Image (cartoon, rainbow, N blue to C red):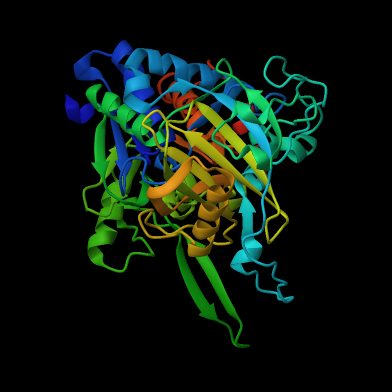
Amino acid sequence: MAADRETIVVIGAGIVGVSTAYFTAKRLAEEYAEGARPRVVLLEQCEPGCSASGKSGGFLARHWSDGTDTEQLAQFSYDLHAKLAAEHGGAEQWGYRPVDTFCAEIDRIPVMPAKHHKTSHTRTEAESVVTSIEVIAPRSRRTPSAPLVEVAPASPTGSDDMQQTGTHGSIAVPDLSGVKEVPASTVPWLKGDLVNTLRQVGNTSSTAQVDPLRLTRTLLAEAKARGVEYVRAKVIDVAETGYRPPLIEFSVDSKGYGTHTASWPSDAVAAVEPAASDAGRACRYNKARAGRRPYVVLLDQGKDIPADRIVVACGAWATACLRWEAFREVTASQIPIQGLRAHYLLAKPKTPIPAQAVFAEINGTVYSGEDAIEMYPRPDGSVFICGEALDDPEMPPHNPFEPVYSKRATARLKQIVNDVSSALTFDIIQYGLACHLPVHAKGIPVISRVPSSKGLFIAAGHGCWGILNGPATGLAVSELLVDGACTSLDLSNFRLDRWY
């Protein structure tokens, strides 16, 4: 009977969550008869791909993580992108195509005089400005003589602390020391007289691109065709069956000192959720804890979902699970994921631009002396441009649709692009756009079962490589869900308890 089927809940419909639902449903269809197949429910409070998964560049590189903790993940996922594109018509469905990739050093005249900021304990927005290359992808530790796209250097050795120093290199632009220059005319849509150096760091056998929003939504459609239930709702808590929250009693002794004692009720059904402010919600908690499933996902719509296994794939919002009852053993230090606010533009070129991705370092900027932007022409004729990122000290807004962009950062990015490329025009453009990239403090994602849990998993913190590594992450998590172990990839680098 349908009511007796196991239920898997995936929270978050970005590229990681959608890929997890897709591969899980695909594996279940191969191993179970239709009537006995476990349910797969995908939850999203906004829209599929509403944050970084729908608002990033969609750049794919097979070897840019070589020699780091994410080397195997990146290479496997790069190849998986090609397989998915071949299977589902990715070129037409989500703009998959191989590209040539270049790094350019460009000179430009500052658009405004340099300003000297007064010393202050409060960090201004200008002081918070970082570039996606500087913060998310600093230089790797690659040996200067090592080829960029053919030979991978030896994996780092030593303790995790030693590896930690280089983990940010897992999403680094390659070291350019051993790369020969090519003529500026190789990328004709840049202003050649401003290009100091131009180097090719990837070709059509090692770098590619996708439209991430179209990829995410196409995979969602394929997942739904395989039986995945998509529910638009906000998760307010995940209750655990049989859990008895402690009852705290406070008292004051004769000297005025306060003390407290904790006790656990013998009847789980009689336990009342301390945070519940109304009887209705308390009743929901009590009912959930008395259920037959290990967990119950409580939704803002009031229709709760009993679940056997739960995956948190909320990107920059993954730390929301720290407030959920069933995840009480997870600590903030185990998922130090913060949203990095990245700005981007969509430009319409005056003439068609070839399939050339460009990472440009701009000399002569007014705040730090150097800026960096990334430009990705797409098959539909648009050009995706990103580069102004704000290292926000606070979490992103709860609703990804809320306006989060900086007018100053957007205007500055627009001006820089206009200065370095005569081919781009802003007559038809989308601007004032930003999203939050889920950046882990160690520079690598979490892809792990929650230790000692009955069926809780976390997959988040992929930074600017989420689109590249999302499909492989989803496949790996599907193996954890269905088989109890991942056989396609070694996930030891991404375990929840690696660092703490």
